[in-house]
Length: 128
Image (cartoon, rainbow, N blue to C red; front, side, top):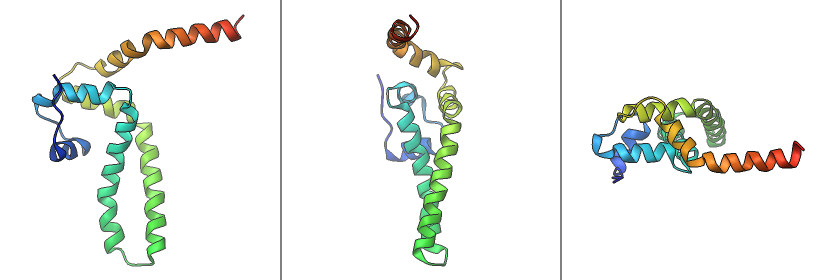
């Protein structure tokens, strides 16, 4: 049974906090479902957004300069987030109490047959 965290728990989780054991199943689902990459990017976007609001409000200067700087900062932050995505998600799963490598194993088990079929189609088309 997966129990979904409320908004405050999710915000805590998005900023790297550990959720209570009651959400352990949801953390594994979050790290292994079909949209796990998108979920990681949303968490990263939320982290940067909460830091961006004070910058836009309190930094002096033309609004367009602040917004362009914010956009460029978002792009760099999201790119960096892509670079560390696998390790970050694996860390979240370990923090929930699962052994190392669990997220990769669950994702591989779910997508393994489809990848094997795709590899066979590719070999039949391009290797013969």
